[in-house]
Each structure stands twice: as structure tokens, then as C-alpha cells.
Length: 159
Length: 159
Image 1 (tube, rainbow over the protein chains, first blue to last red):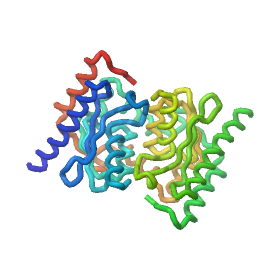
Image 2 (cartoon, rainbow over the protein chains, first blue to last red):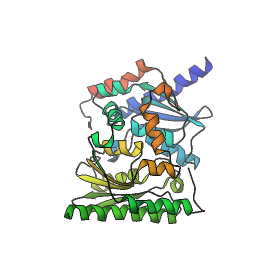
Image 3 (cartoon, rainbow over the protein chains, first blue to last red):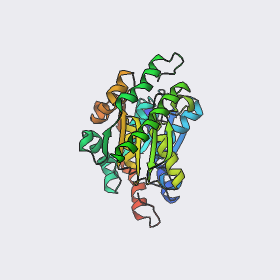
Image 4 (tube, chains in turn yellow, green):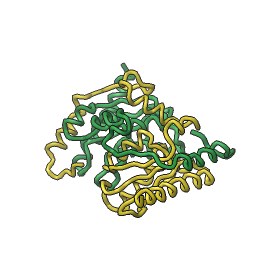
């Protein structure tokens, strides 16, 4: 019950940010990252404001939280997003090792206001030669060199 | 044939960057973005260097190209990546409206050197309740407010 109240408080902050961002000319999306029951970073969609197609609320919040903690691993954090993450943001959540997501609007809700999240999920599930983005492989024999260097390099930081 | 030579030149630059990045202590990934047959932006994986889990080669290159052009839409660009994009980067390519990808190493090659790209593709294809990341929906009734505001707002920049 207490847990439920806390979660609602964090989600309401993500929703408040999403509404405020529309008033500021941005997309209707907000996110907060919580650690030890405290919000440590927030993000709103700033794609059009920053001319950055990757600047979704969740990506912005992850970048801020990682910078603040000085750690690319956020495995002790939870993310609250006003909308179900798009595949870019969901994969970013995996890369950041965040174990838990709470979202408000669904990707179907986002599709109804003309955002492409649901379509992109469908596209990613297709085989590369059936996707809208033309995809081809080139020079795979030469590209392997970097992987060989990586495997042989003792000083690497694996993640 | 000329097209093929140009493409190989761009791919070789992405591969060169990926090798150089290992020598600089970063992950074995590089990317270049090409517009009008010229490289306008490059990126390497700087996740561990920048403490930013989103700082993959393609994301870094997209952010630079968009910033340079002052445009979140890169529909007249092509991206060359030393490795098949992970789902985060592939979705970023969709959001940036880049119509074409050339890659060197495959996601299976990346899996062989212990990067999670292929696993994350599998995870994204699952239903949310079958994923490793715990996912729940909360306050959907309240979250819709931002979408209503967005639809009603005349000054919005849709994308």
C-alpha cells in the first residue's frame, strides 16, 4: 500500500513534467528516475527544441542520472515514464540495466496522437530485408578487426 | 560500381574509427553519417568513457549530424556503422528518418564478443510481462492529460 502510494507520487511527477513540456512547446512525454525512493533525474522530450531525434524523455533522464552518479550502470534505479517507452528508450533501459519500468500512457495511446512508437516496434520485429529502412552488410571481413582488437585488449572496460 | 566504391570508402572509415576507439579504451564500434556523398558526422562508442549508456557510435553520430544541420530529420542521410545497429540505435535511425543503413559486423558477431545486442532484440519482441525488465502500467487515466493538451495545442511542432 505504501509502495503503491510512492509509485503513484513518482508517476504523477512524470505526468506533471509531460504536461508542462507541452506548454513549453515540447512533446507530451516526461520521465523520472528514482533511486532509494528519491527522484535523482528527470527528463522531457526535447527532440524539436534541441534538434536531437534521440532526445526522448527517458533517454534524457538516463543520461542525466548516469552523469550524476558517474556510472553507466543504473541497476539500482527504477524509471517512471508518462508513456510506455518506444523501442529506442526500452533498449536504452536495458543497456542501462534498469530492472523496472512504470508507465502511464500505452504505445497504442501514443499511436492515436500520431507518434510512431507502435509502428517502430513492428518494424524492429521484421527481418532486415523486410524493413522500411534499406539495410545491407558490407566489408564484414574487414569489420571484424575491431572485435579482434577488443578481445585481445587487456585494458578494456567490458559492460 | 562507383556507388560501390564510395560505400566501401565510407564503411572503411567507420571500421577505422571502431579500431581506433579500442586503442583509446572504448568499445569496438564506429559510425559515420553521409550526406551528398560527404561524411558530415562521426561517432564512436563512448559509454564507459562518458558514463552514458546511450552513447553508442550511431547515437553519437546522429546527435552530431542533427546538431550540425540544425534539424532532427536526417532523411537525406545514410548511416554506415561498423556493426549492425542494436535495437536502441536502429530505433534512433527510424526516429531520425534515415532511410538507409550499411553495416559491417552482424549482431551475431557482437554476441560472440559478449555484447547483448541480439539478446535485446529477443527481449523487445516479447510481450511486456514476459520480459526481463519488470513492466507495469499506472495512472493511465491521469497520463492521458498530456496527450489531450498536445492535441489541443496549436503551436506544436509535430514530428
